[in-house]
Amino acid sequence: MLLCALSNELPESPVLSPKSNAVFERRLIEKYIADRGTDPVNGEPLTVDELIDIKQDGPIRARPPTASSIPGMLSMFQNEWDAVVLETYQLKQQLSKVRLELSHTLYQHEAACRVIARLNKENAQLRAQLGRVDAPGARAADSMDVDPKPAAAAATTTGPLAGELVQRMEALSAAALEDRRARKTPATLASAEGLQSLHESWTATVGELRTVAISALDDLVLAGSRDGTATLFAQGGASLQNLTGHKGRLTAATFAPGPVQGAGRPTILTASHDRTVRVWADEADTGYKTRAVVECHTGPVTSAAFHPLDGTLALTTSLDATWAFLDVTTGRTLHQQACPVSKNGIIAADIHPDGLIFGSCAGDSQILIWDLRSAANIASLSSPDAAGANIDSLTFSQNGYYLSSIGRDNTLRLWDLRKSQLVDSVVLDWAPTSSTIDASGTYLTVGGEGGVSIFRTRKLKPVCNVPGLTSVASVAFGKDARTIVVGGDSMLRVFSVPE
Image 1 (cartoon, helix red, strand yellow):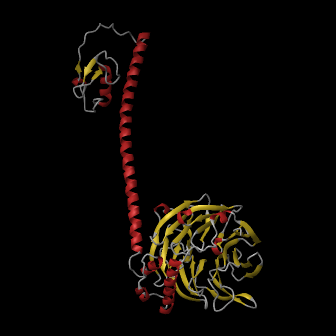
Image 2: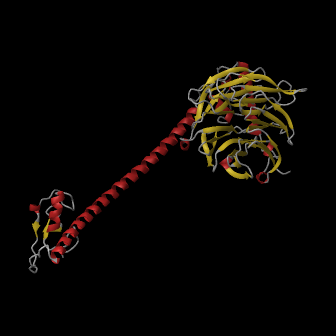
């Protein structure tokens, strides 16, 4: 039985195409050739004269009726049906072609994604290797346990700081490295179950809080507010003193690791949008007084951190795209360095506990690592998935191994400094504003619009959420992670682990 390749029906006037050897109804193939001039099956050029009639026995049909009769209307319907059949055949051909092209495109897209992922991985590995190259300041990597034995050649590093100061910093780094290797988790460290049972110990009403800190001995709490005042509290909630003098909102308020020049209580450092940094020293009779006012920056000061050496040095950053290293005892600027890649200014910085390097962020997707001795940018940390993230805050773990950062993509990231790479990340349901790691390096807490969440540092495993908190501006861990200080909504709240 012969069937038309177009209509798939028995043809009345069958013809054969010499180009595809397919059988067609003559009226259908003639219309198709008149429209397109090709064979419907393989698309080769075809004319009506090339068609071959196929003779077959059959009854003689009556002459077609005129168009004015019902049979004539049926004939017109037949012509319309023929047109529909031709169009349907063409649509099937086009659909098959589009499906084929889509398959090719999907395979190409998948291959391109694989290539991009591989290149990003190779790029991250090359950056990590570059950060460990033995260049000026590369010895800072030794203090992070990359090399089991720090090289003595680091003592010959040249830079803007005095040689005697550099030697003291390197001695601190070597001692911290040995201490870290011998350090064990304190028996008094809060357990995960204890943190899950945190209760509010005391509260205090303060102006719009911007930053909080707690002293190393866990006996003092400092709260910095938008009006430029830093308020000092004793554990328990008693207000001890208001530190006034700044004319802009505070961006940092922190305690020194120990007293300076024999003072009874630790020195305090405050930074403000008024472009100044103030050093506050404790005087036995009158309390804290301004010891020095540092005015080395031309833009708002964004962060201030004490160097772990002995509380006599500090690092500050500013929106003028510079960082400065200060002598706290005199208020003298030992070195000030511009960061050419931080066009919008340096947003935040923190010093590594070994004291040889620090990290800074400029509101983009990179964290820059600097060597304090040479004032050189020795490495940078960036994640392929953070291309659009603006990193606003970073914190070194006191065990020297980890660095945490938070960004405007609501992501908490954890970096391993020994490998110079991202090891884990958590996407939060709210915008984070502050994060900190406890002294043992076991717990990490982050605060923001959604409250306060506590994680185990390794793998960022969730521990608990502190209930009843919103709009948190700053958080800080107390000794052994048994106390958490939270500032926000004009309230200072202190939470403690049950005894």
